[in-house]
Image: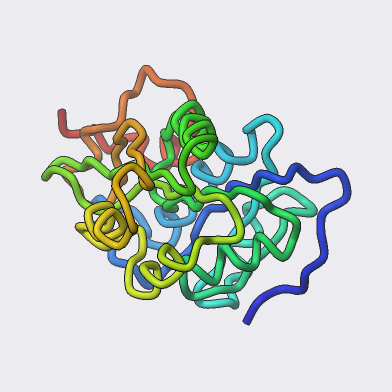
Length: 221
């Protein structure tokens, strides 16, 4: 199901949308409620994209009914209800987006600059990706950006690839008709295992909700 093709008054033609998929497994530190942890990560990640200049922030829901996820967004935030990345890109295009980035919900300390680099890469390529680099090594994507509408080859490739697909970048590049169509931005980490918590930098600004929830739970470093 896709929201209607209405646009947000005064919205930018560039969108950055956080994906909310609560069924995906994430290790939770002992003593912390799993739903509170999921929502803290989601809210902090959403605050990253909502703070971007000249970019409209959005939320993609799968499954479509997530009132707790909607509650973390700012008033007027576009809500897209789609189960695939291709569907989410299409829904954002229907809302007026000419370029969009889809961002994983568990990157609360993601530097906004990395999303900006993906948008800049779209000046010379139809898509760009930021690989997830967790404690155990590369695994999936933190974000995927694309010019809209999607080229046919990318739309087809995204039918069975999402941000959690371990070799997502390799598969998207293999689907491209020629090299250079999916450049890679700087890698960043996602918080999907207990070991990933050690990648958080207490000295880095941001991720306030996650920081507050982890208070009293020392990070493994």
